Image 1 (cartoon, rainbow over the protein chains, first blue to last red):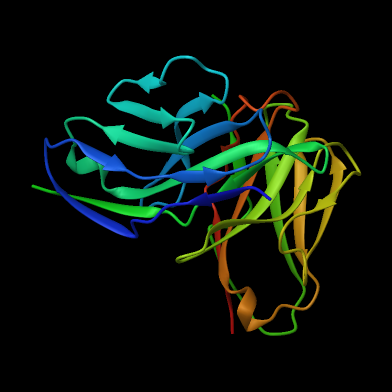
Image 2 (cartoon, rainbow over the protein chains, first blue to last red; image 1 turned 120 degrees about the vertical axis):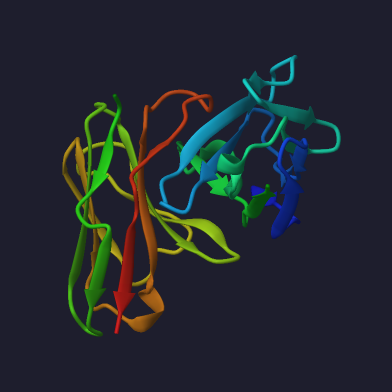
Length: 116
Length: 114
């Protein structure tokens, strides 16, 4: 079975500091994808970044980067130069083929608070 | 701009009522999903559909049913609402492609069952 674990229920960071949100995963499927989503208080899920299991390079999207360590089965999100608007819930998710369809399995989420 | 819309942002229902949550996407996506989100549990998949009139159970289908009569519309039905179905419900859609294809989410419906 596929599983995602986010061990940090909440994090508090000073504005402009970098922050790392942890994510570990478990799967026996050699082909999978890892996603990070942001959920502000308004409730919508915003896609941030994607890492494929066969991608050679760590993914980057602006201030977001993914520290992908395949052997350790971890896919940590790094946000550089944090901003007040980064305060939100963050979800790590893994996508693989389950029951013949591409499905996402989510972690429990980390609530990030950026302090001024 | 891609869009997934849900019929209500907030809904209050009574125990035993039949509840319909509607989701519409305008991206011609094959796959559609219904999740519920509860604190400390993340998002859990209720049902998904990979084609019109096709549906598959997710991880927590009990107490729910779905309907997909048209490609763009996926409905979640609570046949007899109960208080433990009070939750945030999120609809999503995606292409039927590879694991690289992201899911696009609607704004969510916060359902309270009294």
